[in-house]
Length: 116
Image (tube, rainbow, N blue to C red; front, top):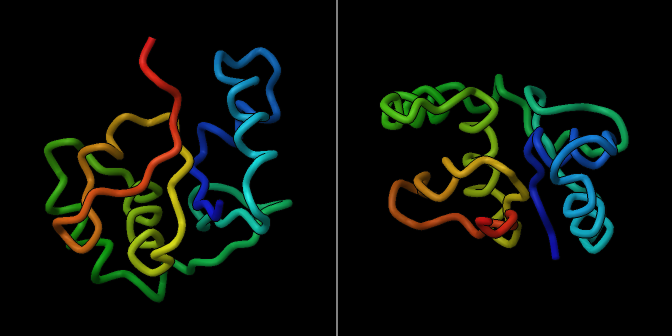
């Protein structure tokens, strides 16, 4: 599976003390490379597939729409990436992604831990 990766799973992947470490390792190892991230999330072994400067207007509009959540810049970038990379799921620990919508109406395909 192709995926766009949020900060939480990356931190959990590298930090054995994190609650979701084993979950993150299991899921990241199953995903097809390259994993996509944006500048506000992280750099390194991942392919930065999104430049904030190229998407300022849609990011502002999205953050304004979800200001009551509130939506961070990193979250807005990941949702915008999901709009651009239709075949990718979003790997996240953040429950706010169940609220966000692609193109304003379509739920994101998510990979996240089950509640419990």
